[in-house]
Length: 178
Image (tube, rainbow, N blue to C red; front, side):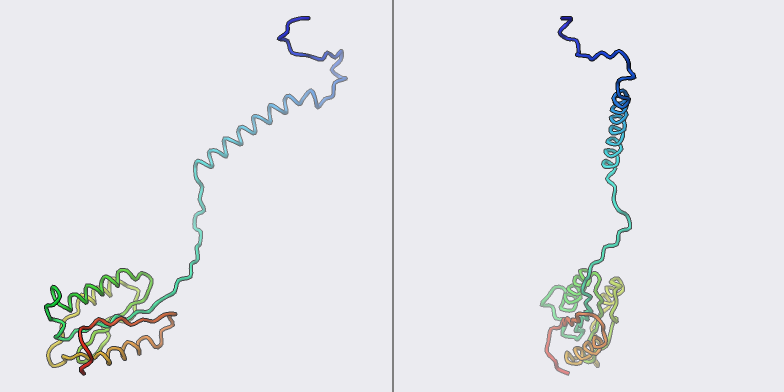
């Protein structure tokens, strides 16, 4: 018995008797391990790069809403029960609402004794905010509160709209007196 730590070996008198694939299996195994390690390293590098698809199209169906803000500009809106006054309070509410309505088309109708379109339906929020800021109390000869005329004007503006939903928001302090 030679040393106990020696590996067991099989002795052949001639290597030609040993099958060829067994002789080269050691090389194949080492090549397999080298290539598998390279492949694993490449996959780790790709995973660490966190690849993402670029230019993906994501379709979402959103309901388009056409909204007309109808704001009273009669002299009664100057009452000081709100600070600074009713008109400024209505304008502030309208501007806050406009800023929160991304994607919808909004328009602006003002009224007192008569009703007229201040801004047609648009998606341009900045333009609508500017028109809202420009609302002032009407002069005395056209004063009054023609709510019915303003609502009729808004309905006529929305009649031909192809939007799925149409809304009128009325900001006024009084009842129809025209």
